[in-house]
Length: 297
Image (cartoon, rainbow, N blue to C red):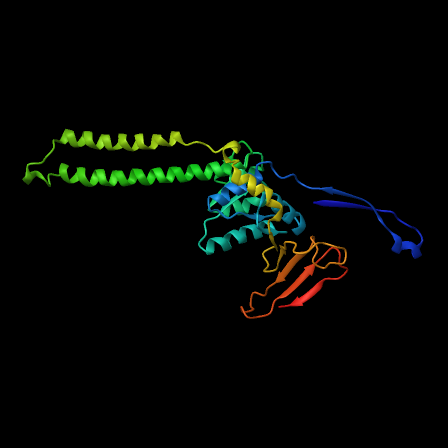
């Protein structure tokens, strides 16, 4: 977000302290209409959603609250996006990256699955393995569901092909001929052809796959999620550092002199080399306070 502040300038040096803000203009990107629905659907599928952005922490937190994302990495450089994906992969996680900008291309190429939007940059499209043609985030859910259905059908086909061949090949080789059970060569060839036909027929069941739509996903559970989305606690990391800001729910009525007002934010700085028993510094930042409060835990 870009903020433009216009000052009512006073020429007299003695009156410089009386300068006042006369206008603030904010410019911010609009969140896609189906972004919150997409995030909710991914959560229901057991997929954790993290926001990696080059925007400042306040803008990133505001965006995350609008769509229900609980973990944000703000002020991240393009190479840091790639490094973060590498960190997740080293932990044994499968990572899918969705992006449309030039600065997303290293991360798209590094992720296990890179998903680009067709209206994005050419570099991002070339780096991704999947391209969303219709510029709808809800198609991310469709792509994942379709891929899972395809893998499930492949496993079913392999299972039945293994059973089919395990029975048919020994019989065609004459293993059961002492028992009077044998087949002619043409029968074995026909059985092998039927095996291929059965696999193709089974795969055609994928035509019954129904693409999820906004109407089908907007259930009462999603409406309940949207009613409480503003209460989402967001953890905002700055870059790839260990320090992060976390929104804290209000526990008291806000007032000008209340240090625990609604607009407070929590920052926790943790050292990478410190052990679990070491002390941590917590800084409470409040718009109503002139100074930060510092507590030791």
